[in-house]
Amino acid sequence: MTRLDRDEWSSLESVSHADSTRPVIYPPLPMIDLRSDTVTQPTAEMRAAIARTPVGDDVLGDDPTVNQLEDTVAALLGKEAAVYMPSGTMTNQVALRTHTEPGDEIILESQAHIYFYEAGGPAALSGVMCKLIEGQRGIFTAADLQKALRPWNEHYPRTKLVCLENTHNRGGGSIFPLTDIQEIAAVCRDNDLRLHLDGARFWNACVATGHSEATYAAPFDTVSVCFSKGLGAPVGSALAGPKDLMQRARRFRKMFGGGMRQAGIIAAGALYALKHHRDRLADDHANAQRLAAGLQQIDGIAIALEEVETNLVYFHTPESIPATTLATQLAELGVGVLPTGANTLRAVTNLMVSQADIDEALQAISSAMKTCQGQQASDAVAVGVARY
Ligand SMILES: Cc1ncc(COP(=O)(O)O)c(C=O)c1O
Image (cartoon, rainbow, N blue to C red):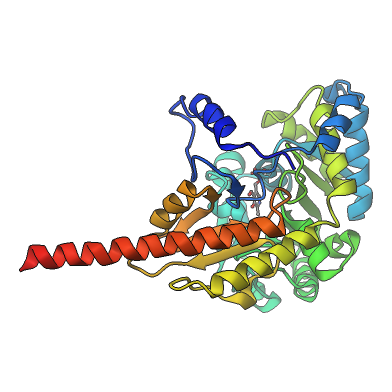
């Protein structure tokens, strides 16, 4: 896998972060980059596939590579049609707009990406209200949904859509069990509600459970999948569902600015990834288990091993060591992790990270923790001296 060395990274970094409107998110120097599965570089083979792909004007419907990708995704998910878009945020937001009208209500889990991380899109782009269900690591049941439903009353907003997330990002990469989904879908059918899946990491859920994509997607009206997460393609997501809804989705994709022209250039990376990188997600899951087991051995780190189900590993520092301090220290050692709370960090195994890298990262985390603990001890002495 191509990974930049320190000098190459530094020269790029000085260029890319010169513009202050861009975020600088830990670390400045990722050698083993565990911040996300979105950080992957296209492989040489993927670049070659991109270079030779035929393209056309996709807004006019004649990009053969985009058309092939959309047909492939629709067939894989067992849906009538699919629409390619630039991002998972756009596929989710277009889905919301497709299923609802302003003033409607959608029901989703309180930590859902759609609610938490999509810049207020449901309110801004669809004018919908969000009703939240408190889940367990992102997962809720049909009984929870039943409780959240409103009886008919002209004073209430009209509830139209339920959204699930599989795997669940803020839930720690947790897997939504198929039986729970089927029961939720039955409640939706009985109450004339549509069901949408945010499947940014749906491929991980399929590999981890052994369910086929079509089986796992069957209970949903629409499914959003990403190619730019664990699959390692540079750009893009797709929304799949019935033809009439996908026609409506195409219109909203255009309205939201997602109509792209020679998009086959990026769709080719997605097609390559679908074909070659799906099965290897099992390696990421094994690496996540190895990382979690190693983290559990490090003095001061807290982690719940049973909560690591796929490629996301969340772990915790003691209250006295802020997550940002550990992340900064690790950045110095060339390991990228993401602080997601005051004492919580996220590490995501991915295409660019080998088993040997995991062992190296664990050594770095152990050493960074010792440094943080040492600083803490010397701070305590300094405070002591100041006091007396
Ligand atoms: C669960 C989930 N849904 C949607 C998205 C949005 O994807 P994108 O970054 O392509 O907009 C992400 C991004 O990480 C995600 O984790």
